[in-house]
Length: 570
Image (cartoon, rainbow, N blue to C red; front, top):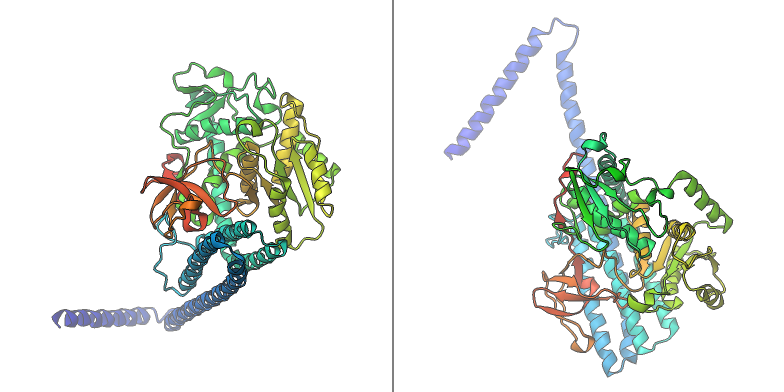
C-alpha cells in the first residue's frame, strides 16, 4: 500500500509540474504571433492520430494473420482428404508386407497433420513449438518453406509405396495431381514472406560480394596478405571449380587474397582468365616466397583449421531465416564470383542460345554417364529425370514443353525424342575429349544454359549438377525448388552438414531404418543414395546407429563458424 501510494503521489506531482510548465510556456510566449495553445492541441491531436493509425495497423495485421490461419486450416482439410483418398486404395490393395508400408505412410500423415496444426497456431499467436532448430526464432518464411519440403518428401514416400505395390499409372497420376494442388496452395500462402526473404537475401548477397571483391582486389598487392593455392585439378571442370573453393573459403576466413596458380591446366595452359574474369587483380607470379603469404600445395589437400560445412555466424541468422538451403547459398557466393565471364564470351553464349532457340520457360536436364559410372555413381534411366520434369511442367500448367539436354552419352537424345514425342529437346554439340579450350567452352556453354533454365533435373553426384544448382542459387537467391537430384542430395566435397530429429521415428528393421527421437543429431552416412522414396541414410550420433530415416522427420542444422570479415553493419 505504501509503495502504491508513493507511486500515485509521484505521478500526481509530475502531472501538476507539467501543467505549470505548459502554463508558463504559453503565457510567456503569448505575445508572439504563433498560437502555442493551438500547437499544443495539434500535437495532442497528432498523438491521437498516430495511436489510431497504430491500432488500425494492428487490426489489419491481426486480420491478415486470421486469413492466413484460415488458409492453413483449409490446406489441412485438403491434406486430410488427399490422404483419405490414397489410403483407402493403398490399404485395400496392400499385401501383408504392403500393410507395413501403408502403416508407415499413416505415421507420416500423422506427423504432417500435426505440423499443419502447429503452423495454424503460429498464425494465431498460440505457438509454443520451436520450429527452428538452427537459431533462436522462427520466421514465417522459415516455417512455410520447410513445410513445402516436408510435403515433397512425403509425396516421394507415397510414390515409392505405389511402385512397390504395383498400382496403376492412373494412381500415380492421381497422387501427383493431389500433391501439385497442395503445393500450389502452400506456395500462394508463402508468397508474401518469400518476397520479403528475397529482398533481404538480395542485400546480403550484395554485401558479401562487396567483401569478396575488396579482399580479392586490394589497393596494394605488394603489402596484401595472400593465400597462394597450388591445387591444379586434372579432373573435370566442375571438380576444378570446387577445388578452387577449397582455397577460396579458408582464404576469405583468414582475410587473405586468394592467388590460384593454374599454369598447365588441362583445359587452358594459360590458366583461368581466358574465358573468365581474373580471380584477383594481383599477379600470381610474385607471391611464392613472400613473408606475408601462406601456401597450400596438392590437388586434394584440405587446409587445416577450416570447417567446410559451416556458414558465417555473423550472418547465419539472416541466412537461415530467409533461405531454404543456407549452405548452398554460402557456397554460391564464391561460385558466382569465380564464374564471372568475360563480356565477349557471354555474347558468344547468348548467340548459341539464340541459335538453338533457347527461350523460357524451359526445363534442363544433365545426364552424366561415361567414366562417372565406373567409380562414382550408378546409371539412372531417362524416366527418372523426366518424372520430376513432367511434374514441374504439370505444376506450371505449361503445354509447350521444351527441355535443354546436356549429356556425354550420344544415345540419350534419341531415347528422349522416342519416348517423349510431345516434348521439344534442345542440345548443343559436346566435346567428349575433356581437354583443351574447345572442351572448356563446350562445358561452360552447357553449365551457362542450364543455369538459365527454370527447373533442372540431374545427378547430385556430378560436380556439374551441383555447380548448376549453385549458379541457380546465385541467380535467384533461392533455387531449392528449381533443382532436383535423382541420386545425391546437395553436398560439398563429400561433406554434408548435420541434421536434427524433429519428430520421433520407430524403425522398420526390414527396411534398414533406425530409431530417431526428437533432438537426435544425425549425419548423412553415405553419398550416392538420394531419397527418391523420401528417406535418407544417416548416422544417429546419439544412438550410434546407421540406417534410413524419413526426411520429413528431420531438419538440416547448419554449423556456424566465425568470419570476422563479415562483422560489419549492413
